[in-house]
Image (cartoon, rainbow, N blue to C red; front, side, top):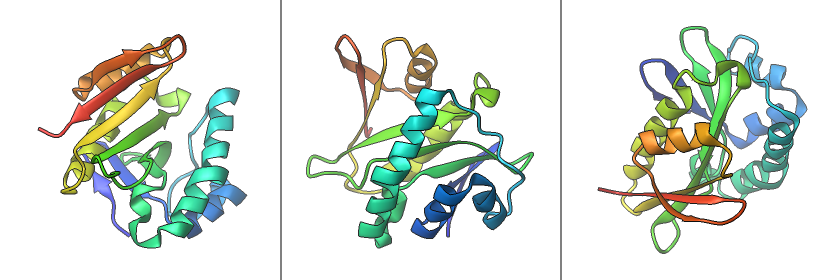
Length: 174
């Protein structure tokens, strides 16, 4: 297993087996990763999205792509100072034929507004753009999610479109 580290964070790409532990119990995953008890709290909508991603994307995709699981999994965002998980981040897979992939992320409500999402995204982008085929990372956000807009802008994403319920963003390799 490998991790990505920054000044304050460690990003851990969860293996298929670790995702299975997460599906059973967050506390069991914390024990397996030698972490202090998680401090992840989300509103019910975000919690439902995480459960859906776990059951319908991360688990099936990491099973299908064991060699490249890090492109299909949730990366646990760990606050190194306290050795506690505070969120997650990840891509939707290896770059497609156009060199694109999508990114998604979330930080616990207890830890919002401290720059952790910005820092985690910066780390994952640096790792992703080291892959020679990755040219563009895309993201989508609801129009009302100004916190996520700031995270993307701080990481040099540009707005590429907008609909009534979504804003579209992208970052191209320099």
